[in-house]
Image 1: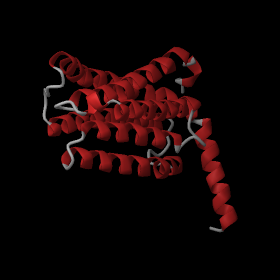
Image 2 (image 1 turned 135 degrees about the horizontal axis):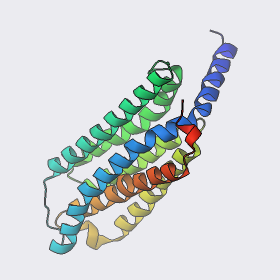
Image 3 (image 1 turned 30 degrees about the vertical axis):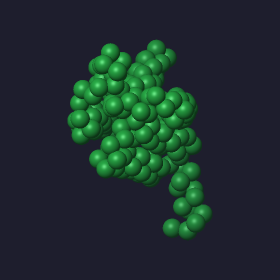
Length: 217
C-alpha cells in the first residue's frame, strides 16, 4: 500500500469512527457508571476512616492495588461485552480497523500509567502518587483519541487531566497530608474524585442527553 493509499485508508477509518461516535458514547455509559459507582464505594470507606482516625490505614498497599485492579477488570469486561454486543447487532467484526486505530492511540498512555502506578505501590509504597499517575495517564489516553472520539469523551479526558493536576499541586503543597502515617486516605480520595465522581457525572450526562435514535438499530 502506497503512502497516499495508507493516508486515504486512515481518513476512511477516522471518518467511520466519527460517524459511530454517538453509538460508542451510548454504549460506554453503562460501563462508566458501573465503574464510577464501584470506585465511589471503594474509596468512600478509606477516606472516611482516614478523616476519623487521622490517617490510620484500613487496608494494606497490596489490598489497595488488588481492589482497584478488580474494579478495572469489572468495568473493562462490561465495556468489552457491550462493544461486542453492539458489533454483533450491526453485523460488524468486533476487532475492526477502527478499533485497532483506537487501541494504538489509547494503549500507550494506559500501559505507561498502569506500570508506573503499580511500581510506585509495590516498590515505593506511594499510593497517592500512583493514583495521580493513573488519573493523569487515563485522561491523556482519552485525549489521544480526540480526532475521532465523541466530544463528551474528550471533555472527560480534560476533566481527568485538570482534576489530576490540581489534586497533585494540592497534595504536593500540603506537607501535613504527605506526612500522614498512611496515604491510603489521600489516594482513595484521588481515585474517588476521578475514576468515581467523574465517571458517574459522564454517564449521567450521556443518559440525560441521549437521543432515542442513538440507541436504535
